[in-house]
Length: 463
Image (cartoon, rainbow, N blue to C red):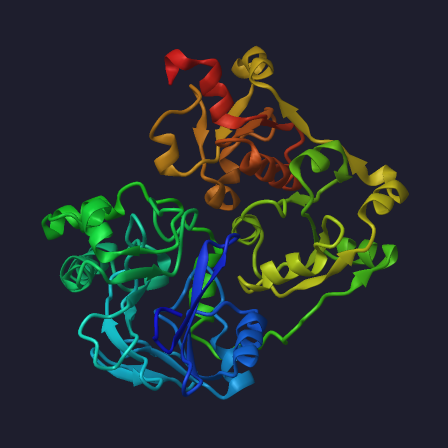
């Protein structure tokens, strides 16, 4: 709340997906709208209940590609309408939102601004504390404008529309419409640093139009052609699940139950699941995985970008058994559900005891220091799994560049008869990639401790 205003404004931020959603409400009337909700909607419902609010509407700024939106869950729980920009054609019943349309919550009002470019149907939402205000309190920019960046126009989410066509629309949306707002208007984007929806996102959660006008490379005066070139260059490889999520968000789909949980599995159930083709997702730390894990398990630790990374190395239809740090079982399943990975069969109830009981199935992972790599570099395939923008600053000489998001489609480029050493920036992604290659049948795979950062520190003259 600000001064004597009757507006309630809440930002919800998920570090794992770098994803922001918003609640905007008028305290006097109790009417509220949720913008860009995640699929596990309990927090929105709890906050609305606690504050005496009625959620009347849900707005998605576009068809999200990096997570499954919770619009259907919220509508089912509250009876709220679901709003999209008028260029959107989802399968389900929705409210079509047009340029300049005002949505009254009482004295607090929202106004729709069409801002295509990241996707054809993208909109931004202007938030007014008072219906008569000339300058809005802020703008919810979705993936059109980030802090320090803009939404990439080249994602597969926009099938049938080229990156150049979308880039031109984004140019107008950013340079004319959003930069046409007053300097003091606050900017609240849908994503922050780490998201694959852009390449230069800030860790800041909000900014102002004036600050972005001064500091954002894509908001500087330039021609349309220059803009398209600069915003499409050096983008990270999109995870494979992005197209799945963008499609799912247009469809009528199965709802995630409020407070959904997954069950513990007995040893016999785990054995049967793995024998029938399920994947064991080991969410413990890379160090714990290295010390001992079930052969064939995929390592994606819970201490990083778990959901997004699982979406790079597993497919949505694969059945999953979880082996997580104690107490992280339900949170891990929820994080996977946020990207539509709904085939989690359950979890190993006591991981350490399970590994002891199944010692004959347990193996260790190989990790090399930089000095150890130096001794074998001529005899191994070094694979760099960083994104294109990262390797532009340098790579280990002779390394093969396969971004982690492309490994599932390009693993066959590697010689299975030669040892592989995987490198990333610091060692997290390389451990994931190494586990994936082992699960695919590569028998001699190591990852580089400390990654390219460690190699670069040991070779300053080459950096």
